[in-house]
Amino acid sequence: MLSIAIIIFREFLEIAIILGVISVALKDCAGKNKLFFAGACLGILGSAMLAIFIEQITNAFEGMGQEIVNSIIMSLAIALIIYTIIWMQSRSRKFSQEIKDRGAQIAKGEAAPKGMILLIALTILREGTEVVLFSYGLLSTGSISYGQFSTGAMLGLASGVVFMLIFKTGFMKIKTKYIFTTTTIFLAFVASSLASKVAGNLLAIGFFDFLSIELWDSSWLIEDGSAFGKFAHAIVGYVARPAAIELLFYLSTMFTIYVLYQVKKSDRRITV
Amino acid sequence: MVYDNNYQHNDNHYQLTIKMKKSILTFFLFISFAFTSHAGNFKVIELRIQNHQFVPNIINLAENEKAKLIIHNDDETIEEFESFDLKREKLIPAGKKVTVVLKPMKPGTYEFFGEFHEDTAKGKIIVK
Image 1 (cartoon, each protein chain N blue to C red):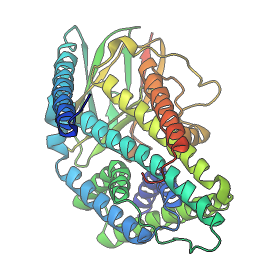
Image 2 (tube, each protein chain N blue to C red):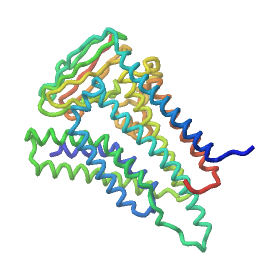
Image 3 (tube, chains in turn orange, blue):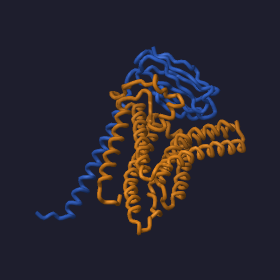
Image 4 (cartoon, one colour):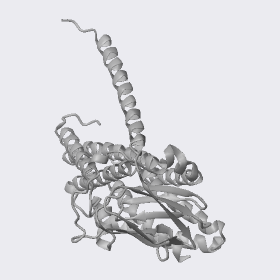
C-alpha cells in the first residue's frame, strides 16, 4: 500500500508546483474551481487513454513513439504557458487600474481562459500516465488488494494536494504588487525547462547530432540524483550536464517570453 | 494609392497558407532525415528485466562507442527505465521490449534504475 502512496506522491510533486502557480495566476477568477476540476478530469481521462495505448505508442515511429508523444504534449504545454503569461500581463494592468478607480466596482468575476483546462490536463498527463500504468500493474498481478490500493492512492494524492496547498498559500503571501511578476517568472522557468526536455527527447531520437555535446558538468556542485538536485530540476529545470541543444532551447524560450512580456507590458491596449 | 482592404486580407491569407505548407514540408524532411541518421554500426546490448532486477546490471562500453540497449521486460508488470546520468526515461510494457539509443559517451559511470522498483532494479554503464 505504501508503494502506491509513495509513487503517486512523487509524481504529483513534480506537477504540484506548476499547478500551484497556475492557481495563483488564476487568482480571483470566476469559475476557477470548476476549471481546475475539468482540467483534472481531462488529465486523468487522457492519462488512462495513453496508458491503454502505451504499446501502440511505444512501437510507433520506429520505436520512438514515447519520445515523440511526450514532445508534442510538452510543446503544447509550452505554448499554453506563454499564452498564460501574456494573459496575466493584461490582468496585472486591470488589477492596478481597478485599485485606482475607487468608485468603480472591482470586477473579481473575470472569467478564466478555457485554455487553462487544457494546460492543467497536459500537466497531469505526463505523470498521470505513469501512475495509471503502475497502478494497473499492481492491481492486475494481484500483488495488492483494491482496498489497499485505494487507501494508498488516496494517501498519496492527499499528501500531494496538501503540499500544493502549502506551496500556494506561501506564494499568495507575496504582495499583490509583485505577485503577477513572480508568477510570470516561475512560469517562464517551467516553460524553458519543458523546452530543454523537448530538446532532450529530440536528441534521444537522433535529431541534432551536432549539438549533442555536453557543455559542462556541474555534478560537483549539484548532483542530479540528490534531493536538492531534484528540487532544482523541478523549479528551474537544472541538469548537471546540459547538452548544447538543450541549453539553446532553454535560453530561446526564456528570451522569447521576455520579449513578448516586454511587448505586452508596453502595449497601451488592455485586451489580450 | 488606394488599397482595397479585402484584397490585402486575402493576400495575407494566401501567404500564410504557403508558409504553413512550407513549414510542414520542412518538418517532414527533418523527420525523415532524423531516421536516416540512425545508420551506422551500433553495439547492441540486450538488457533484461527479471524479478524487478536488471540482468546484467553492469554494462561495459568503450569511450565514444555507439551503442543501443534493447531492454526486454520479462516481468508481468510495467517498468520504467530511467537514468539521470543518461537523461533518459522510457516505459517498457510487460513482456515487451524497447530500444534506447545511447549517444557516444565520455569515460565515467552512468547509473540507471527502474522507477517502479527502485530498490531492486539498479544498474550502471561503465565507459572506459
